[in-house]
Image: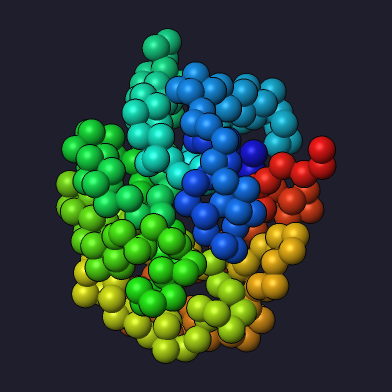
Amino acid sequence: LMGYPDRATVCVSSQAGCGMACPFCATGQGGLERNLSTAEIVEQVRQAAAAVRDGALGSPARLSNVVFMGMGEPLANYKRVVAALRRITAPAPDGLGISARGVTVSTVGLVPAIDKLADEGLPVTLAVSLHTPDDELRDTLVPVNTRWKVAEVLGAARRYAQATGRRISIEYALIRDVNDQPWRADLLGKLLRQELGAKRVHVNLIPLNPTPGSAWDASPRRRQDEFVRRVDAAGIACTVRDTRGQEIAAACGQLAATGD
């Protein structure tokens, strides 16, 4: 649960664990335990809405945003996630009354599911966890890329933007000496401009959060700033995401069970 000056946001999980096996993410390294039910997903949002209403973030407020960026690949639990989206965005008393425009669904790029979601009539924001613009590295960082390549993922994102009128968010975890090279920033900007158009996409850079046993680390600030500058220079909006939850190992990529 995160409070900002203009909004209150909850980050929810769609699965216990994750089967996507991205090597820089603690959740992916732990594997998939099971899908969450629609009720379990909606309950996360209901509890967050009640907490915000009762002043958990300071003064009483209203939950405005829901991001499916906790444990799991939302589109791998497609039916339950879509049912949860309908319940979350339906007006009260049948639903929680949260605007679809305040809901973001993240995916590593399950192309058929992206196309299916575009036809659901739910104008939620799609966030694509890209992490690199080239297939050679993405095959390693996001193993599902061996099935659906970068061009196919961006093509599906373009169709989603066209069908819903929503801007696509590109998530990019910046890893020191792995995917933070200037040429990758240039290629990312060029590809997004070609495939999506400058007005249809925004890049969220995520400084890599440390996970136990990982040799990878966040890029230094100087490299991060240069990456932003180069993507911006290509005409693509690019910002660094505000990292929350690191102090309790609950930041992006850190969600995993610990202990016995």
